Length: 95
Image 1 (cartoon, rainbow, N blue to C red):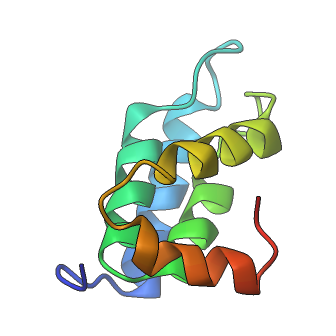
Image 2 (image 1 turned 60 degrees about the vertical axis):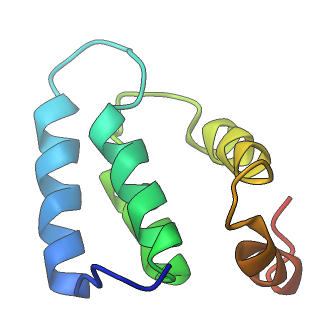
């Protein structure tokens, strides 16, 4: 963890691009780039920035953002980095 640190400006620009690219499409799955980038930020130790990105990049036309976020968090419990992430989730009451 803690490599490839991104700035908030970089993350915001990428989030806008992903959200705009998906905005004209009918209901679909979340873009893989959204999930991959979120994971990369979390694994780089940029946890708050990772969740900011997840929220900012989620296309408005795709329902289920909060449900998908919860499932993503459940999946993270199987990550080799879970011990480092777990404290943050407990502190912020994320389940």
